[in-house]
Image 1 (cartoon, rainbow, N blue to C red):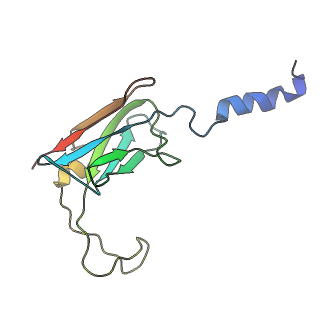
Image 2 (cartoon, rainbow, N blue to C red):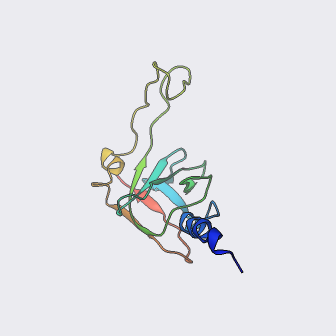
Length: 140
């Protein structure tokens, strides 16, 4: 039996969650643009519930992505999301760190509407204990 003096600590641990992945669901899928895989595309799931952190991923060479919120590939919390997909061509010149003062973004390849969660038209509902695979086919 747990002593009553430890009860506040136990309650705090239960509220915070002990495991890094507790409450997260694996989310993955494929991104295509005009029917072709879109390697390097940035995918973002923005929760419709305030206070829930966005989950993001980057598509691999076959256009497959897996979401991360806090730890690599930990997924997203269950809920409804607005989705954005953005792909930029590599900028000319040497590759620079994103925080370098001389860093320049590449030219946006995907239509601008897909970069705006209010205009993209892309949505997803992440459900616990379900296959959460979301494929997105972007068109001009």
